[in-house]
Length: 191
Image: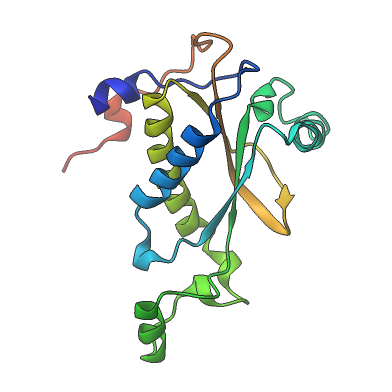
């Protein structure tokens, strides 16, 4: 059941060296893309997947982004078998429906080369939806996941990194013992 699946999720801090099956991973990524909603089908973000063969690049990210910027030397999860880097994307070839709407005068900021970088809040929402779908599919396949937002001024492929997510087989059981959400009444307000 989906509820039981998501209740088991925790932030993985270290992963084993065991590499998840490549076919399974590609299927998970493809299914995530298929299932994730996107306003007008624009998908205004890009996902770079650093797989098991990208050890040196992951090491550079860890040394540059985590250690040198003092953003947490504990973040060895960057070295997971799969590290996904999410950036904003200029949508330079929208679907025909959006092209027709643009001809009628509608404006889609993600299609404007001078404006698209100002859409981080909208793009971040869609990235979050992708990450949540991916999380569920990973967990169905006994893979652990971790999320990272604590990078500032990190650029990948000439675009600002908005989010990073890792997955693989967890090396340790849940480590958090104080990372609890606030009481629901502090967050959810019924009117």
